[in-house]
Image (tube, rainbow, N blue to C red; front, side, top):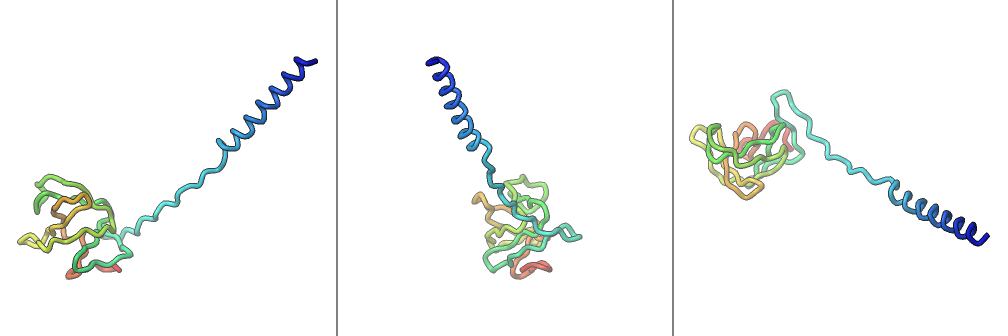
Length: 128
């Protein structure tokens, strides 16, 4: 009788432990709400909710924008800027106006294609 009681108490303790653990393990976890991507326009750009300033441009490329070591496609890629980010402008442009020098997210100075960067002097349609 004593052995049966110990077994029964042991089973009850195990059941209680499993119940409390399953509550911890199976408790619903909050799911993060993803930030919706800005809508892509027919020309491959996006309409961002922010406007460029005199100090910062706005990346309007629908895909990550390559930051290069020089003003041209043959220069190595330093990194990328995500759509709607606001890189700091250095004020320099290439002689042909196709490239703009920026300070990238990782602190490096590089060049991006101006057609994918809205600036205060050349805002993109739909920015702001």
